[in-house]
Image (cartoon, rainbow, N blue to C red):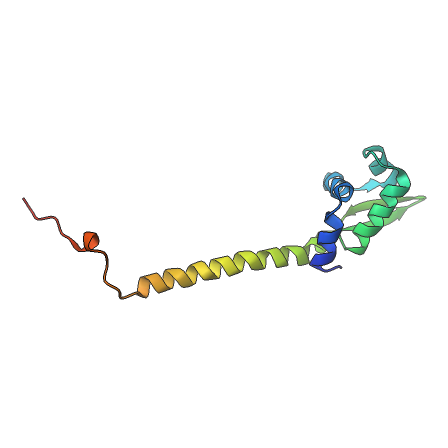
Length: 118
């Protein structure tokens, strides 16, 4: 499996993103992928090589055909990296909420005023 940088590099190409999108629907052979894309079969094979080396796809040999499928484990490192941004943001928010709730500063006067009973 590749690192998140390898996955980001692989997904930086529009054709590779389109291949990934096609494989989301299910496994496909190189020929099936090439028929659905405006690139040659050898070009699709080259893109699949990059996707395989980044860990995004895997394949099985079926006779003379290689059938490619998404490899969910390939996105695990990228997902973990992206999740770390969310976790950092949530941690900062929690720290701020804790700081605000323990803040002993006086509140603005409009919060302290009581409306007299009529």
